[in-house]
Image: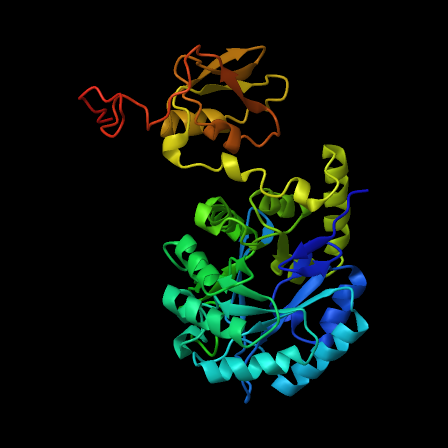
Length: 430
């Protein structure tokens, strides 16, 4: 069987699946259950200074889509509301009882060196394997000058990271906020500060829905609501893009990445690892289905790796990164067209409606055998693949490559591009 052992930022775990800093890692009871279930590591819910912060009720909102509950998940919960001494005592005990599992502690304190120095010394005494600096929380704490308020300022990221590296022996992981215009700049600041790794993404600023009776954003707290942090399957595409941007950046090559954001299955995890992540962190899926989902994640990833002849995680880590390119590096002479399998088609007409109303009028209708048929007009099809996405039948509509006989041509080389060495003096204004 494939070896799922990882060594992330020098921290060993017997598989790449960690629980992210969140309610599932708030206390020893939860973490004990997680380790019994088979999780490779946890990031303990974010610790802060005493006295503890005060949370509100209710705390969660969700978006359901197409019958899928919690496709997106929103929370307005803050960092731990338990005394620091209780958390530290429980972390010490859990690490003593489970020495083979990764124990990382998330931290967030005011933006001064004394506060960071003090809490780092306390965490170090627990025997924890590392710390994760929470520079991502977009609600409640950011209004107090912490969380995303730090993660949105590269100078602050670098400064605090440098403090932590100078005052602790533990590996320092910097958790980045997605609520920025350039994630690479934030990651570069973390690396410049000496970070051993970065983790991303933290949650996205959001309002999931509005109660039209009370006219309050949800979740509602005594008739009022606020923006929260958005996570769950809906944010996976955003997280993948940001992980990939860091992984492909030459100046950040070699910086370990912990992938976070909508990971619900072994396949999700494999995609993050293929785009450069060294391990993954899970939260919403565990809150939705419980800790036993780790069984499917471990067995699924292991079986897939066996089928691909990957003996260890490093064998496929980052393999997709060279293929994640900028738009102007894509081959403009590549062409594909849609093909409809008439044996699988259920004659619903969704492909026709989508193409006729909103795309390229590339699907024709005809009647025969007492039923309506849909066929692709190959000369008109531009290969946008909208029809394949709206089709409710798996593999009914597929995209078939067309051999044009033309050499690969990117926008960088195109004669319509004024920056191209082959520029002809005219531009394509379409």
